[in-house]
Image (cartoon, rainbow, N blue to C red):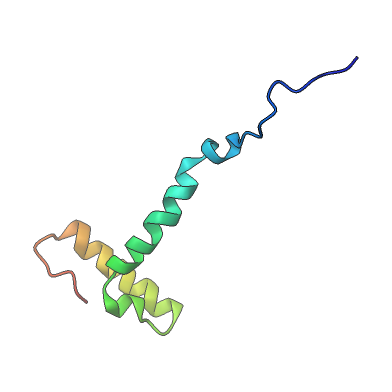
Length: 69
């Protein structure tokens, strides 16, 4: 038995399957640029994590505090 393709054009349905993956590639640089300079220029991963945690706590738990480190 011979089966013919329904469409002759190639469809890329996998591109629309997970749009949040493409969204992250757009938002991640924006989030990085919104971080304080002190966090972005941390010399070690430990310092970066500490500064990121401090920034996030200040941002979400105490809105009256300044966001710079």
